[in-house]
Length: 356
Ligand SMILES: Cc1ncc(COP(=O)(O)O)c(C=O)c1O
Figure 1: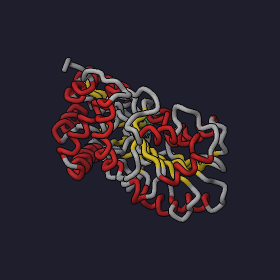
Figure 2: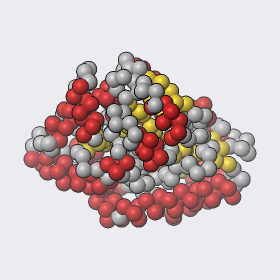
Figure 3: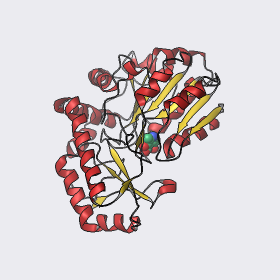
Figure 4: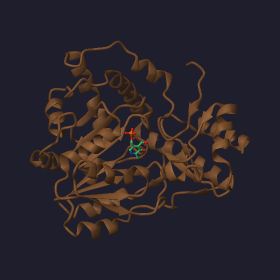
């Protein structure tokens, strides 16, 4: 590959030569047998990754397209937005812009969503949809998904939408067993594909809900996706290059083995955590609720984060993120998602020490 600065930001991440080769395979028609065979071939692997028997859909949009779609397809009475950082907070605004009743369940950035609070809110009967970000990429918080799903299990008329954008394929998430109604993810995080593409799956309960909701639009209508997936096509012309790259990535994932892949992410994440402590920094996310695919480091030492990141790039050609939104400069973020190994993460940490 041509020399380039390597991304250790929490998405997009480095895309391998192998993936780029698949991305630039010769084009095929999206209504022909070649495409149907491609979709059919990758589908069982996608279902395994999602932990679902439901259809998995290919969306030529970034994750926000599907996040907005979930609101448009499901929300009627009201949306409870579980908010703990930039991405989960934004969902409230999106729901309101879609013309829905929406209310925040807000915690301070760095804290997790408390399942008991979700329960209290749902007991009011005001909500039929909940939005939850599993791994809040801006703060490095990983929310207690299982516990929150257990709460949702008590409310059969409430649909749970889970953004697994920065956790998918880095940690195990079993959609059906957890009772998730819409699970969605993007291409540019742990899947290490180029950005601009996303994947999602929808429960039977959510399809039934969508049937009763008007103004679902066309591009993101869940029922259009469902109808077309039955014939191994997509409602509109998809990014076929992404799907070729996804096929190549799935081969790699199952060659490595799912458990081995999750363990690799856990190990490289632990290496970053050790470095944080060794270097005298703190974590922005509270203990016990930290993402396994990225780390949000609290700048308790008061370094010039922008200068730190600039020097790292200039000297070592590695790119880290100087913090998101209102915590820019007060934090910085290191990613260990995608194809990173002990060797590549160790190199990053050595370079961080050098620049510090
Ligand atoms: C947790 C989370 N949700 C949603 C998004 C939005 O994804 P996109 O900008 O690809 O639509 C991101 C992007 O970083 C994210 O990290």
